[in-house]
Image (tube, rainbow, N blue to C red; front, side):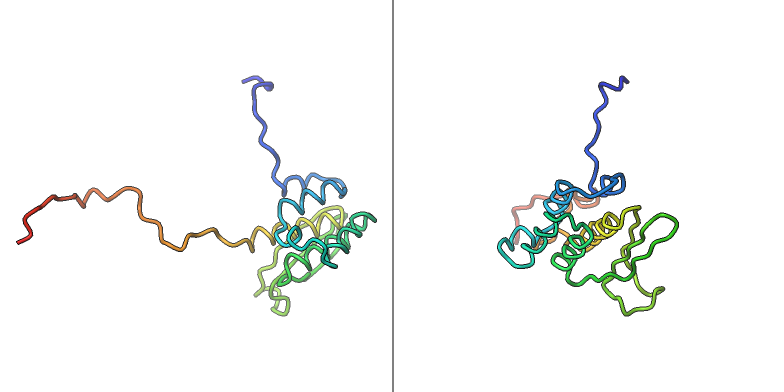
Length: 155
């Protein structure tokens, strides 16, 4: 198959975060538009205005931390560490638990803001509510064991 004929799938947000070298205002606005549920609905709020000011001043790390505070209030930063040229970030819902009992969301990147944003996106994915209807789904195909029978004599 020719390379020209191959269709390339758009990169997921996690892939884009992993491959990025630095944060830009456009990239951060893409992250906000794809993952944030509260940010658009709270326009004019002091917290969203603060995030917008941080983005305008290119304070990427502070903007990422403010996004976590706004969008995921039940999540907290458990660990930020720098080792061997990479930043490691862990977010947790149960920060007081021992490390081996907790199930934090972990991310790493050479850039601190991108490591925090990667953990934020993963925590958003994990905490997203499952879309379920209020009525259980019926099976699409009946089992062969059950056959419909027509009977008009009910006496």
